[in-house]
Image (cartoon, rainbow, N blue to C red; front, side, top):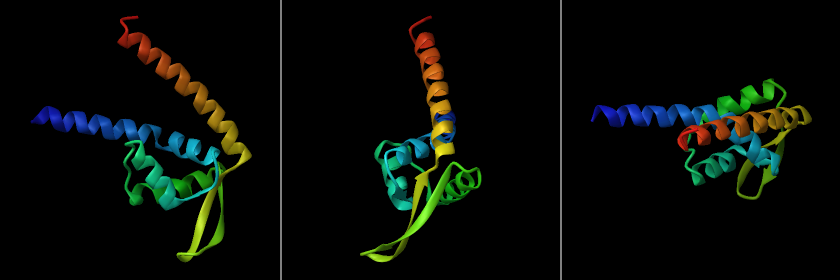
Amino acid sequence: MENTGIIENNRTQMRRGVLEYSILLILASGDEYASSIIQKLKEVNIIVAEGTTYPLLIRLKKLGLLNYRWEESPQGPPRKYYMITDYGRSQLAELDAAWDELSHGIESIRKGI
């Protein structure tokens, strides 16, 4: 029973570790509003709470990685669409390289080096 808690905690930590990277990847494909970002993360089992995502989007904007614009919605109030900045794209390229290096290292370990 205790192991289940440890495993779930590890999964949660791993998801948190790739959340910023995942958001930048999503936005590199096009502008999205927060609910859409959350849905895309859920679709690939990177399940996050709105309470985690919104502060992260604000932080990424403050860091200059994202920007946003308001757009009228046919289904309710205006939506805030997030977009990746040029600086965000350069940081994403760095994260891509780091991910490739890390995943290659993990695969080597899994295969017994």
